[in-house]
Length: 496
Ligand SMILES: NC(=O)C1=CN([C@@H]2O[C@H](COP(=O)(O)OP(=O)(O)OC[C@H]3O[C@@H](n4cnc5c(N)ncnc54)[C@H](OP(=O)(O)O)[C@@H]3O)[C@@H](O)[C@H]2O)C=CC1
Ligand SMILES: O=C(O)[C@H](O)COP(=O)(O)O
Image (cartoon, rainbow, N blue to C red; front, side, top):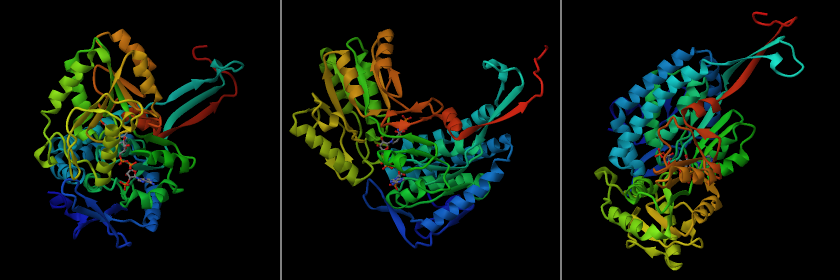
């Protein structure tokens, strides 16, 4: 059970502690932040509201710890990460329980998130050993005007202190996708977990603590992003920010100083369906892509752009599948569970009302009970409706009927987002041309958008992000190149 047994140390009465200097601590603020269970809409957990002074101390310890960590052999860093991964997987049950209570993730998906996270940590350790052990050797005579008098040796060095800020929907997986690359590359790490999801993240951090990482190397400060977020992101002790979330990321990128940024932000992933598509395959992927975790995935299918000639058949197939989705509490492993907060549910309802006023066809009756919103397909959506452009982050999916492929590509590219998209067609050559024309970081052909598997590159264009994630890209992003040049008094040519 959460906060018991091995995890008892992280709890003080009914308030979870924060993690700094290798210890679980109470904040001197004496203030707490409530975490509301999306299903019951009652306080489920409480976490510390950390102070600016505590953030300062964490940054100092992170800086000191990083210096000796960078001198720890790469294989030893990997060994510790493998240990943390094993502990995490072994203790998947209490962490998954937190995910169910804090963010209403269906029970089975919650377990999958923890296991996937352990695998990600292990994979990162292996990949780090491979790619960080390699450097480059360059000689000067390849550039015009030079003789072979200079040997340049390059290697990848850590950046220093990495600040990691994940969103509520994958508070464990999107935290370790930042923690593991940072650590294997020789950096220290300060985590600010999302408020909804903070307790799952604290349990995960305890697994790293139990693995035996040096004190100060990993810290976890809790509190509302709106209160301590700016202080953290503008802190002079931070050398790199890895953020996943919504528009907050755009604001952070304007405020952050001269530090590398990795931003994974929102999306409005389009699903373009051609006349020759396998409509059963499309319908199955629209259900998986649009409604899993109640549409609260950045990579969810967020608008279907279907050729008019096959639209009726496709909509009927999707309607039939929606009718089979189970709706209810995450504990029962229902397909559709309450969305994360009342404000989120209100926002989704606003989009639905706007679509109704402007004449969208409701394929199901709109139904809501508290934060629980029944799955809804909106047909005949037009570009003047908000839902055509905004991401609901909920189980509501618009269908726009198109008369040409160009119309579909135009809608996709007119979005301010550019995360992923997908194309369904039996003609792979045509699908590739469409993929090339779509202004998104990834296009899936004949499958729904997805970030995983976690070693694939993952990036957004336009307002969907800066840089690229995925294990290898994240490790590279959290390092810098350092060169040493050996200057010879006379040219030297091998075997010359
Ligand atoms: N491209 C991608 O990979 C992904 C993108 N997303 C996007 O994230 C959004 C949903 O997630 P959500 O958690 O609501 O996103 P938010 O942007 O609201 O929050 C993300 C994180 O930022 C923190 N935060 C809030 N304000 C600040 C601030 N001023 N400075 C620093 N940090 C701050 C939050 O903390 P707190 O919770 O305390 O407010 C949270 O940890 C959607 O738009 C979705 O598309 C989600 C997942 C993946
Ligand atoms: O936060 C998200 O939405 C994730 O990045 C999506 O991950 P997935 O596509 O692998 O579910």
